[in-house]
Amino acid sequence: MKRWSIKIKIIFWYTLFFALLIIFDFYFLRTSASRVLTDQATMDVTTATIEVADMINVEDDGIYIEEDDDDQELFSFYHDGVVFLVYENNNVAFGNAPDNFDATTSIKLNETQSEEFNGMNWLVYDMTIENGYVLRGIYDMNPMMNSIEQVILIAGILSPIIILVASIGGYIIIKRSFKPIQDIYKTASIIKDEEDYTRRIETSFAKDEVYALADMVNQMLDRVEQSINREKQFSSNVSHELRTPLSVMQAQAEYMFKNAKSPEQKEEIQTIIQQISFMENVVTQLLEITRTRQLSNDDMELINLYELVKLTSDAFSKNLSDREITLRIDKPLFETNIYCNQTMMIRVFSNLIANAIKYNNDSGEINISFQLENQYIVTYVKDNGIGIPKEHLNKIFDSFYQTDEARTQNELSFGLGLALVKEVIKIHSGDIQVDSKQHEGTTFRIYLPSSNIK
Ligand code: ADP
Image (cartoon, rainbow, N blue to C red; front, side, top):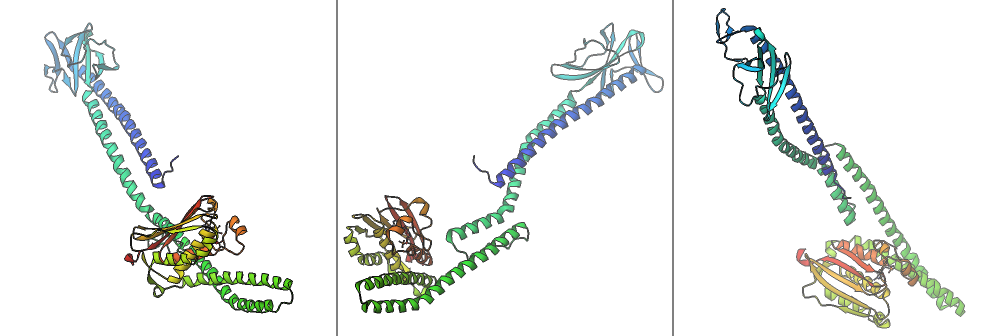
């Protein structure tokens, strides 16, 4: 199921709740209003009929109503909003029934009847008066019903608009309230993607819960940065400290090799020399990584990347021919000038080409090509070698990381090459990405800013 954002969830529930509340309110309003008004009308028709029954006299020539001054005048059959009829033997004897009212409705004495004819509503009250006549009071409910219906209609049209306005207003407020959290998320993503642990989350907003969260994340980042710096410092210190003793050991071992008395002794010393040079290589690469981190703008110069790659690859002609691997470098149709530290950039492409050879099959192929993408020069280093299993892909740039296959194949490699490559590319404001399929080959994409944007 598609996951809804918290914003949408809140708006959905709030709108639904609001809509249900309004529907319930209308229903309640309609029923209670019509009940109250019907009760009032019942009372009006009953009171008016009893009052009129008390005041009228039926004469042969018509019905008369007594006035305050004891005079009599002809009754108009209308009093306090009620229309009257006088029945004799169930037939209308005096008065005119209102339009749409069926005057033949049976008489039920002393009780209020609710009648409906053709969708029109009436309240009727009957009571006997002198000489067997029956007085009927008729109350027209239709104006009252129409006003209730009109109120409901207007409310029915207005409510969706009110709900819509409330939802949009609510959405805007919630979006604003969530903005600081979204900012935290964005900054955290940038920190993760760029591995830039010097960045911090902006905490200039009000000192509320979100501020506390951002502050906490920043404190955690302080610790991460400190431990990364400690680790960098540690490996830099260790490499520096090991350099001199290793050189001394190397010289001593070579001296012992020369003066060895037997071939067995020579072989043993040779193994020691190999191990020392392996350790020297590790130390050199660690120092190179440290040096890369300390590169400044003054160490950069304008270099043609295509020429640099060509030059670098020349050093591998023997390794290539030994294993009958073909290396093709496609000449780009655009300028490939970049600002870089030449020595470090040569290290980058040396490592990538060395790996493309090392992890290739005999008679394999390597292809290097260039493309221009949004002011970045993208260099593709592609081989059709053994490839990298998917689960290792995101770790190969870590220091000392090797796939098991690589570990057993190359006793003299130690998984620092790509860590250095990544560090150099990062210091040049670039990026490196890898695509690989096991047994099919690997492609490294190196993004470097073209000198045009410097
Ligand atoms: P290593 O010294 O082991 O070559 P790197 O840092 O250069 O160390 O590479 C790390 C790991 O990435 C290697 O051990 C290997 O498993 C894998 N790798 C690097 N380049 C390639 C490639 N072109 N093809 C296959 N695997 C590769």
